[in-house]
Amino acid sequence: MIRLLFALLSLSVIAPPVSAQESPRYVTKTIHDPNGIGKFYLGREIAHVMGHQGAEWLERPERADEEKPDLMVDALGLKPNDRVADIGAGTGYISWRMATKVGTNGVVYAVEIQQEMLDLLNKNMASRGVKTVQPVLGTITDPKLPTNTVDLVIMVDVYHEFSHPFEMMQGIAKALKPGGRVVFVEYRAEDQAVPIKAVHKMSVAQVKKEASVVGLEWVETKNVLPWQHMIFCRKPLPK
Image 1 (tube, rainbow, N blue to C red):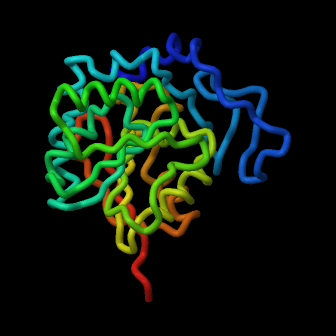
Image 2 (image 1 turned 90 degrees about the horizontal axis):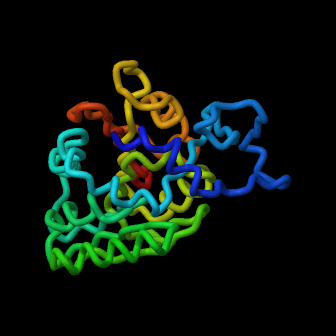
């Protein structure tokens, strides 16, 4: 289970410092969940991020049963020639699966803020012969995606770790084509049976609230995965 090692992995990751000049959208607290960074956005504490030291965990064999990645990618409804983005792509576990759907004329932007992860991703794509996955080194505030070009953005178990979710979502919304979709894949906070720590879960209501701040509209929620929900939002079409 991907989040059960976070208590150990986060010890080797330095959380982004919270500036005294931080946006008023964020609140910091000295007393907080030890699995969070003490920074809150719209009532939600932001979780510690997984570092590249945990890369092997992303490729563990049991992940296929725990997360059903092939079913997840099938549920996206991708088409040949689509331009899609995998934010927090890690080792490319989801990226290469998306590449098989968009075809040789499509593009998968694999966005990471750690160059070490992108180095591992590049090796994995080369070993699989995947040529349509383009690595992108983003920042904690900007995914560095081209404007108005992306058909779909997916974030698998990573959005709740963004240290600057408002700024990142602004960048994502800017990158989407009108009508383009964002898919939040998050562990279900509504389900106490999901064996994941609270700060590493999100509810549908919380995702809707945070997406709406940057003008995205909720479309649907798919509950086809064992522990995660897939929450689809959309950039509105021009009126």
